[in-house]
Image 1 (cartoon, rainbow over the protein chains, first blue to last red):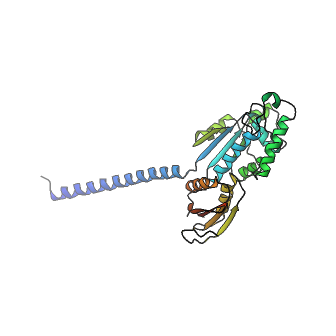
Image 2 (cartoon, rainbow over the protein chains, first blue to last red; image 1 turned 90 degrees about the horizontal axis):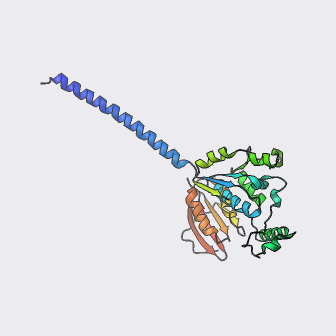
Image 3 (tube, rainbow over the protein chains, first blue to last red; image 1 turned 90 degrees about the vertical axis):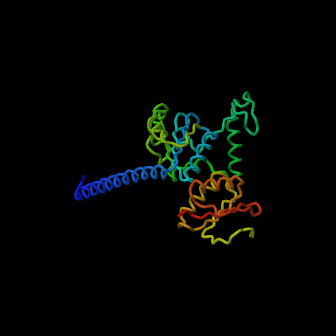
Length: 197
Length: 84
C-alpha cells in the first residue's frame, strides 16, 4: 500500500516525464517542419545540357526556355560543350547560322543535294534572320544578355575549350568559370527539369 | 477602353508588350513586377496570343495573382497583383 507521499512522488515523476517527452516531440516536429519549408521554398531548378550544336535553331530554344525559367523564379543553368561553345564566343555568337542540310522542316524545304552548295547556309541564315527582325523576335545576343542579367548560369565546357583551343578571353565577358562534366551533373542532380538540346 | 472589367482595380503601373513575342512578355512582366511593392497592380498589354496561357502559368508559378485578363481589340490586357 502506498503512502500519500509515494503517490505524490509518482505523480510528480509522471508529470516531469510527460513534460520532457512533450518538449522533445515539439522540437522534433519543428525540425521536420523546417526541413519541409526549406524544401518547398527552394526555387525549381532547370538544367539544360546544350551540347553539340552551335546553330541558330539550337540556341533559340535553349535561351527562350532559360530566360523564361528565370522570369518564373526558377534557377537555371546551361552547359555549353562542343560546337555549342560558339554561342558563347565573342566572335561567333552574333553570327550563328541556320543549316539547311538535313533540315526538311524549313519553311522552304531545300533538297540536301542543293543545300550543300556554297551560299545555301548563308541564304537560309539570311532568310531566317530577316523573319526574326520583321517579327521583332528577340535576337540570340539579346536573349543571352537577359539570361546573364537574370542569373542564368552559362557554363562553358572546359574540355571543349581545350579541344578547340578557345581561350577564356575569346568568350563573352560575365560568364562563369569554365567547368567540367561533374560540376554540371552536380547541378543537374538537384534539378526538377532537365533538358537536352 | 474596354468596359468589360468585372471590378475597378487601381493600376499602379502599365507595361506595353505589344508586338513582342515569346518569351519577352513574361520577361518584361517579371522585370516590371520586381519594381512594384507587394499588393500593387501591374497592367500588362500584349498582342502575342501565347501570352494568355503563358501569363497564367507565370502567375501560378511565381505566386503573383492574375486578377483578370480580357481581350481588347487585338490586345490582351492582364491585371497582375504582386504577391505579398
